[in-house]
Length: 405
Image 1 (cartoon, rainbow, N blue to C red):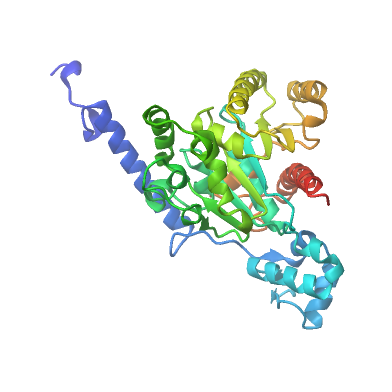
Image 2 (image 1 turned 45 degrees about the vertical axis):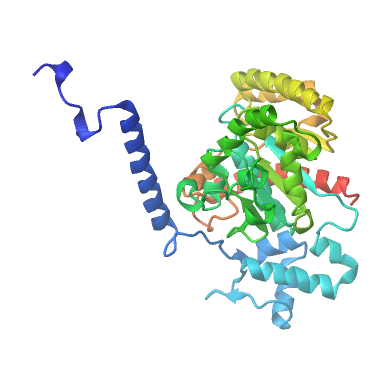
């Protein structure tokens, strides 16, 4: 038998389509098994407890103050290790915030920093269409950081690849059914659902999620057809549908973080119209900067079209977030300097460093906020977390400025 007529190896189906289908099925099964191994017994993630030192930083009091509360029997009762170290569960942190707000009413807003009447909902779109710019990582860390700071956060995964959903413990092909993505709340037919029906809780206290899967691509396919089939006016305009859906649950949240798809399609245009602020992630490599140039040109053209059609694009702030930055790399440092020279204060002062700690955490679908102490090297962990927190604090301060705080 000649090599050309030999049967394919590994007993795989002959056609490319059959091979792709089988590979997808095998990989999905393996990912589900891995998820069950990582997060037994119900294959669901759970958030760790936090040390009293961490909680003190989140809440804005001293560790000594928390120790005294514990000794006086006030507030939630922390768990005590054999060495006398105190730790709080996420629900206890929330309980502590409410206790402090009630016992110190003059400082209540610092302990429970929810939106006040008249404070508009902040919708932060994280965007770029260049792969590897850490767009999903930026959205994940921002959402979790804001929740740890006491805010009620809705994370919306608009990327059909569903990486953000996976990081929150939802495997898109198994855990997200038909009509359970944002598409369910913005579709054009009678199957459209209320936004509240697609918002689900997460293991991360303070963060709710609208998950994603390949179903989101239906909006890209159906929108041109809908525009041809019937005239779309007012709330029916495709780019207003995301904002309309978010408005249905506005009273439940302080901040919405949207992980945009890596292309300027109808979903992205909807997110840009719904947003009150925009973060553009950029990896400081010349090829990424060149790609971002095209992204900015295309985005400005798209936003111009949306405004001409009556869209609202009055952003409270737009910032560039330098990600995966190696501060010891001279060419990267030069690119960061170039970006600051070109864009001035629109570039966040803090850069998020390239770190094995962040990468290693991602391997187990975790963030640095979730890792148990000692899971990675202490020095690497602290350097990475400081750089992430530096960027997130700047964004939080921008949000506070919008609210007049």
